[in-house]
Length: 300
Image 1 (cartoon, rainbow, N blue to C red):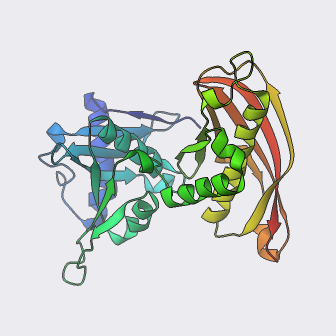
Image 2 (image 1 turned 90 degrees about the vertical axis):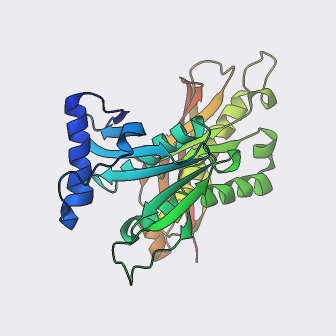
Image 3 (image 1 turned 60 degrees about the vertical axis):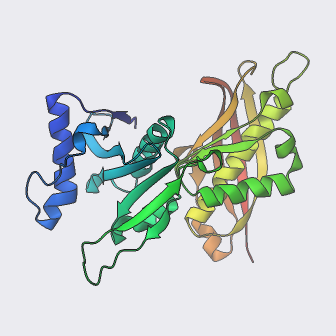
């Protein structure tokens, strides 16, 4: 399903936006109409997530407390749509907007129910709320913005995976392969074109294959961790179809829906067999399609 993020502007869009904020964040706590808005709305950036039918299913707001500090508030995902990665989509959009405008840190206030989500998104607990004195009190979290922590979701896991590649698969470092983004449902890995040129000044076919293989391998590894499972990931068979030369911006993408197979058998000490499809791009243009059959060797 296709999703889009818009900045609500028309009267209809703004009505839908504030209605979603009130219905999810205020109505369950018996708060009155109007409490879903505040004085910062006029100077904030607003975003609304739409599904394929243009129905609003999530929203969020970004404003600046100072030139260096941005704050995300009124994060909402429709309860009927939760568990599909929509919160990460909204966080990603707002964080990129904050980064583009020069923020070096972002703060978020959170109740217990959403605390785990923000921690998974790389936020750190800055000030713990005293919910004994005030059950409605919120924790304050912070994320510091710098080139090393641009990954939206599970940045610690991605750092560990990158280290594994560098230490155990030296060619990955020589090729300049780096995890660019992970959202829990999508993984994007990039390479440095100048380290992978052939005599035609395009990317070696073998380098494209290696980039795609590591992207598929990485997605399997991260999804194992998401499920709390253990096992050794190996490539059983890989095929690739090259469509045209890659000359400028090598990047590979894999999405959760591109991974087929059952990992639950690992709980019974049985190997898992997964089929993973990866697309390699030159900037925005697809140049190769990789299909990998990965085996997760059960821990015995």
